Image (cartoon, rainbow over all chains, first blue to last red):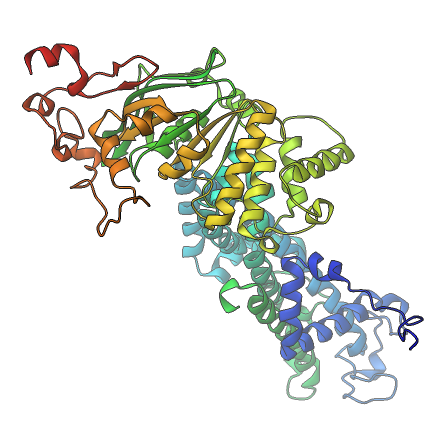
Length: 299
Length: 329
């Protein structure tokens, strides 16, 4: 009898890949199973790519006025989504408007996230005096209705896209401060913090290298849900005439410009509204998926 | 032999409703270089609090160290160190490992990161050197495939492995003193023995002094050189390990040893010391053990017994062994 397996390649076992899988790898596994979240992610990816590459794609100039082609309906030749009251191409305006809205949303969230998390970490880690001062101030911010607070801040700073961004991010700070403080409070009592101290680590090192990474899951979920909220809030401010100013293509501005023609040409205001709806929906789906994937209780 | 660590009249008070309550009352003991000292006592007797006080890790807003207390390490007083100086001592000169290896490693960071960080907190060395030293240390504590484990997360390791990693981290910088706060309580019995052997072996090899805090007399008998028995925040007896087991003096120590099951006698019931440890705010006036002591004398209820030396580095704080008292009693 000849040895049968002489020339056969023995399949090598690769334990490495499985061993390498950290907490993030496991979260991705759970996330992948959530169909709605994956759909949201794909939708978001398509929109982001289209918006990022808009200048290189064959879209019309979003600000090119063509008064002979005003308020053309959806499906017109040369203007797939029609034109607005100045004959500007709707598709192009929505895509360029999305760039502004999404960037505003992301930057506003980033500002709120950085300041809010820092405050939350300090309050939760050092407790006592810091906690009281910071969290009572956050309570004051939270006590205002958010639109009122945002309007008040814009009233103080003056209208404009930049100031809207600052206003909505200030409104968002307490949200992050609370989330991060809550997690920090629970992690600071963990034995590994004591162990780190016993091995000579300083407070700042422990805060940023040990507590912050543990707080990331709730922060990521909050961010994904909050970007949508920020986009909505910024568009709302623009709709009220406090944010982006015409002729800039921005969804809130387009919505407010289009409302005058809602009877003769509903698409001019409905389409930007639908765009906002789609983005916020996609972000919320992704956020829900992330929450399930990162929440230790759901496992 | 010189004393590496000297704890002098250490008193620790904790705040409770605006009042300061003394939990550990003026205890003194010393650890010699390269010695393994066991601190034994039941839960809540102040073992862990004492070790945290040595590390300077008691929560400042909640606790206070007595005015006459002093902790000398290599001749320098730790209680007078600034926060920054204390941090330099921790990990480099005195290291500590904790009871539960499941929670004393950060779950979201790799083992390699946590080892590297320990070195970088005290020394300026290249990443490469950090890595080689970490791997070396992991191998030293008996971890197989150390290189791979550097990239793994704590949840991928078993409890015993994690405790080995903790020991490796604590000993990377070759501290002179290691405080092990019940290092084996959370582990399986078979793993317990391995970890104890490991600590003992490393202690012998590198001449590190070890304070082993435990409530398990079996552990003490196995590895320690000297034992301090604590009861309700007081040192009741101090003796070389053999002497303590052969000839215990204090009624509490006798009770503790008597309550251990033996293999020789066929016992149906285990002996127990009647009563329980008094609460810190309800400490009795005289000897803290008097209400539970079978040999208590009237005197025991009124005055605290001093630590009486019985020679042969054996000491106990009990009126039964006080010469003056014996004359009258």
